[in-house]
Image 1 (spheres, helix red, strand yellow):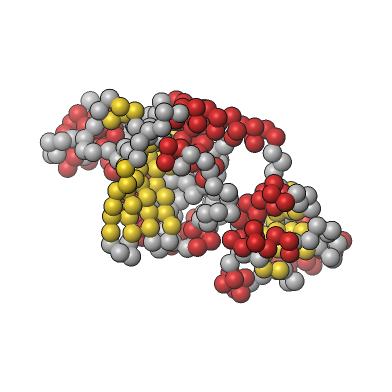
Image 2 (cartoon, helix red, strand yellow; image 1 turned 180 degrees about the vertical axis):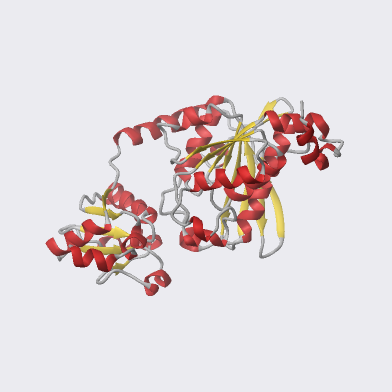
Length: 373
């Protein structure tokens, strides 16, 4: 039953014949997990909180960066370097203290994904990481749960609902649309190509709307339909697709592969900024590989670093030496980790290290480090 405070807060929902008290009760009883508290996650979390979803889970192992503030509207300047999941949960409690928040300040990985997702009814994919997206898909398929997908690129976005039962028929999965993951170098994220700040807000609101429709049973859920939004052209269109007969098999095989990778794949060797200073003094011939974009390189770069943007690595990998240590870096260490994985797997490199935290970590008090070490 809705309390008097809930009836007052959600009055405009209660006035809608399609929703009414019954729909609001369903929202109150629902448990929704939002994976990623970034550009997409912020509007999803804000609107699901405002709508009165009873329990909201937040998974994000990242911290707030100043570059996030252009689009991640849950955060402010004072939050920089603080854990996103913690900051988001605290801010949302101030927005609506009638609901519960469970936050996980960690990355969603094969070791914890099944147990975390198991505690929720619906998953909202607000990540920009393909391996995590496929992991969400595979676990949701095997656990029989729907998940709402959103993705953004520059001025364009996509939204759909996967593994949702519509009119008694189980809908398509993410692998029905995209059976195999792309290479980490194939499709850049917004850290590499940029994104207009309002786009994740719009796509995130579409995602929140799909969640509310799934919970309350109203409207037409985007199952078997991919909504494509283009802000530059002010256009929207839908693409229809069907569930594959081997959807469960694809999910099972994908999850097995993910677990094998987690168990057997060596993570890139990482160096802290302090360790890199020591290495440069010990081994001055260390090759510094900058995989950011030219405009980032022009703003600042490590002395002597060679620029080979991430997107051009496949065509220029032979410029990376094999006969001396190579330290790869980007802004925060994610793109460089993908480059190392590609070079190791595709071309057999075994002399690569990743600068943990990227040039951002190097920039913090580097003069002090140089003087000390």
